[in-house]
Amino acid sequence: MTKPDSTFSTLSRRAFASGLVATGLLNQPLAKAAAGLLVSALPVTPSDKLVVYQIFTRLFGNQQTTNRPWGSLAENGVGKFNDITDKALLEIKKMGVSHVWYTGVIEHATMTGYSSAGAPSDNPLVVKGRAGSPYAIKDYYDVAPDLAVDVRKRMAEFEALVKRSHANGLKVIIDFVPNHLARQYNSDAKPNGVEDMGQTDDTTKAFDPQNNFYYLPDQAFQPPAGTLVPEGTLAPAYEEEPAKATGNDVFKAQPDINDWYETIKLNYGVDYQNDRKTYFDPIPSTWTKMRDILLFWANKGVDGFRCDMAEMVPVEFWGWVIPQIKASRMPAVASATTSVAKAPAAAASAKNTTPVVDTPIVFIAEIYNPQQYANYIETGKFDYLYDKVGLYDTVRALMEGKGSPIAISRVCQGESGTLGKHMLRFLENHDEQRIASRFFANNPWTAVPAMTLSATLHTGPMMVYFGQEVGVNPTLPEGFQGDDGRTTIFDYWGVPEFQAWTNGGVFDGGKLTADQKKLRQFYSQLGQLVSTSDAIRTGVSHDLQQYGKPERLFSYLRYSAKQKLLIVCNFDPKETIRTQLQIPDTLWKAMKIAPKKVYKFQDIFRTKTLITAGTTVPVTVPPLGVLVLSIS
Image 1 (cartoon, rainbow, N blue to C red):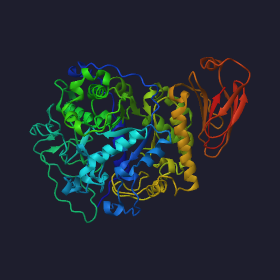
Image 2 (cartoon, rainbow, N blue to C red):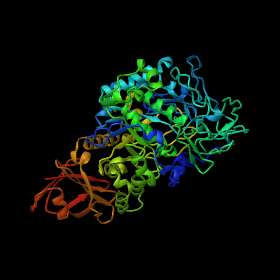
Image 3 (cartoon, rainbow, N blue to C red):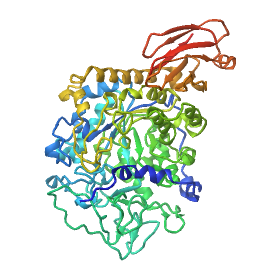
Image 4 (cartoon, rainbow, N blue to C red):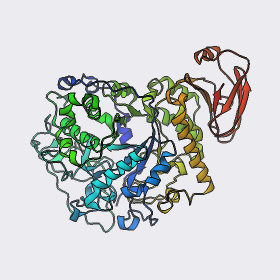
């Protein structure tokens, strides 16, 4: 059997999105019908410095160590909602975390079936991996049965997890996948009165604004040549006629093996095959169905949504839907938005929901086109955007021994800096390679300056991916994804380094090495720093543009009325850098510190370094070292 190029297939989402350019579709005004919705503005939050901890839910609590490539659930095991205990959440909270992103919650296509519980398996020809991609949604109104101890009570187990998270002071984020769904999508959990996706589509038309899907009339879908199926797995012929367009905007009856062939593209009223002409008035069917789905989960107590491939969905939809979802959690305007808050899906499930917490719902966009950043914030109403092609790509190059920190200054002068409070910073997530892997830095400690900078450069949120804090290093081909330095999102697997921390469900790090314990301590200290520092949470950022010799240093000021910080990061893995940093008189005035000959610079982060100096500050920073100097 032919295996697809794992790098291409894994990166295709980013490669596709990075190639987008500004189009008429993305720059058109909001649909007239949406413009009529008036919702009071949300109160300004004291800080945008969320600390997000991403959990790949299927893997988090799995204690099995078999790790057979392409192994079944019985062989390799699977984590459950119930594995994420109060103790686990308490230990995560201690890292300064404010939000937990539970990845892979909503029911998705899989080769594992629970027919007796109303959740049959899917055809292996349209599933990636044994467990399946969490981004091939099978039922927007249900949770993945794999994640439940009692499959029949799977939603109740998820609701209990939401309650536990809130009880431990953590907000809950889940994925919302708006651009595509599984080829065998069929909602059997939708509330009464809710019309299923595609249920009333006119399948004789390639495009209709009120269709939920795009069709290829008179053509039958064919799985790609070389589709991977585990040995010994029966794969009956898959029938789909007429064929539907594939998730990554592929309008062919037989997509390529590197396409998102397991998914179907959703129709938001954009005619892709006719110059992307838009039909937003009247509101397309897909818009209202997706709004009701978001309201359903908001009424479960979910506090935020990470929106998958958000820029593949028209910005007009986001500008229409996000204010409505936020309004549903605002008691002050409840009387004015009753029709919004009690949309059919939400109203039908109102009796079986967890209590709603009075807090603004946050929306995070997975987006890779800097030309559209401002558009998705201003028109689309997103709170936060991925900062992947800006800061991540820049610091990754430095971690790999390439480039210069001068490039960080250039990034700060662009969208990543001007929109800094909206940018979600990270070094790992489920799409990216692990820092410790041979495909990235080969050493988890290389992340110290890069992660410190990512977390403290601006007031926007930061994120850590589960296991990053103990140096997870994938070295085996887990299944569909192959050996690519990533932790699988497609197959059942145990993560040895993380299992050492969970320690059989005790969550005390009892099996970690001394080095892993120190690494986790660094991430804990960093999370606590950014969650408590007034200058980092709310203050001004100023790049000193002084890089040391060799040019491997990055230095900047973060200051508020309550706190002034000088932060210095050394990206060199071997050289201690000794240099003199100049703080200009204009910045002393900006910080409102009275001119004097001597100041104290005290490290409040990892060392007890104390420097007494004037406006010229002598610093010594060891290899991969950082200083967070409080100025007084």
